[in-house]
Length: 178
Image (tube, rainbow, N blue to C red):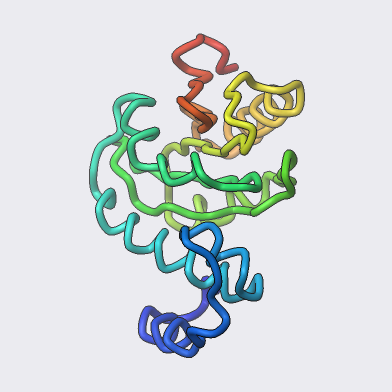
């Protein structure tokens, strides 16, 4: 999906037939259409949201939560990254992976490849817990530590990891960033 132009994405979206879409909510509709098309709809939504935040400085986890509130209704884990310049202005927003009901597989190369390419100074990690509970799991803590270590090695600071659920949890606010 990432390699398609905006025009190509729109053309692909328009090819989804009305008969494919079932349900009353956006989530119901996304679940009723083939997964590649659901990803297409989500990609368009991300690009639309990305336009609103591009160039904006991020100074706290509440801003991140407000931008990513849409993840509160996700039925599977999604892992995103905000790529920032040296003044913590958003350069790019990227969906890294969509996981299962309660797990998302993340590898440092997926986080840092676009960050290196865009000459980022910092990143903010974001993922959702479909259960609504924002308490970080052991795996959340481990991946935060691992990504922070990799970031330090390559000179891109991981400034926060925000978990979205019914509310949000910020590793930085709870002084849990390595």
